[in-house]
Image (cartoon, rainbow, N blue to C red; front, side, top):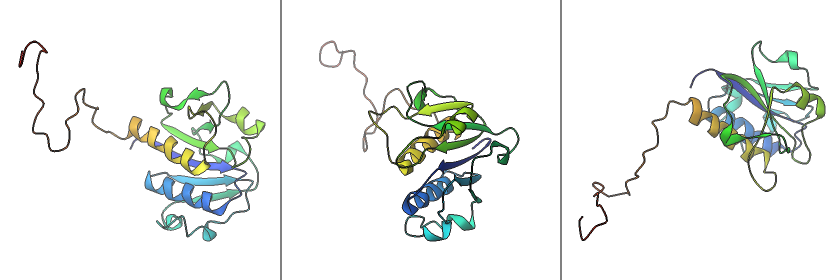
Length: 173
């Protein structure tokens, strides 16, 4: 995958959600993970972080928000369900980014939103669990930068040897 990225959450309060964020960040090849204004410790999340991400992924626990803590050139992207946010499937991810998700019960603070170059939303009827939002955001990034082959126009079914083309005229056209 090209570039680098980090992911984290502001105001996170549940250890299992931190575990899911760390495991997902590790699985998608994040360069770092972080929390802002959270008392959670990565050592207390072993039930949901079964990959042992703390041995492979730098985790920063910051008491407050300070945009200067991020690497120079790192574009801050807020993930929040707001009216003016860009739908995630339409978003062109920056090459070098840090994704900041809101807390379990609440929204990103105004200072964090103001510091973000972009605010994106997952186009759903209501907000999702922060762990699921992490996975969807990083999956979307991996589709863009992951070097995957383009999707075929015609999909073969499992076990199908080939796709027989017909014109739709008569039996075999």
